[in-house]
Length: 125
Image 1 (cartoon, rainbow, N blue to C red):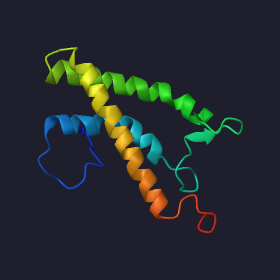
Image 2: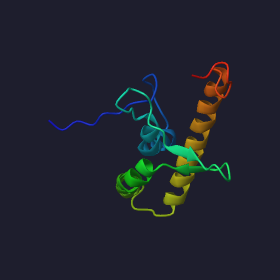
Image 3: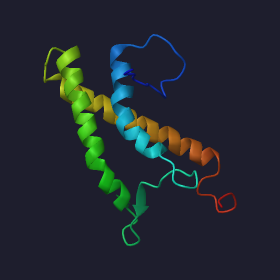
Image 4: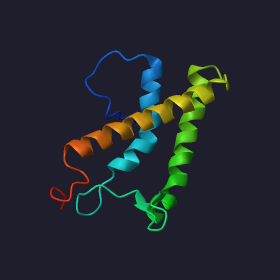
């Protein structure tokens, strides 16, 4: 009756626990970038400030982020308690793994975007 679905882990294989945990914990944020809108396009999570050129979260993202953080923290607490015998010192290391994975994922996406002509006026819709 109760099932757990894992996704976006690639081909089935043996995975070291730190790598699995990194991907699992990162997925709480990664899925935000994969949400589709009513038309089947990915939901835009950032907007560019006209004056500074810097990115900022959209209002829709700001509204959902606290729920994502709550789910992430619950999962992190359980991982630490059940897999690391409650050793709190591991929390910082896990957070570093997650941030590194998110940065790596973002770099991969930007590279794919550039290869497909992202930012090129002639190739953009």
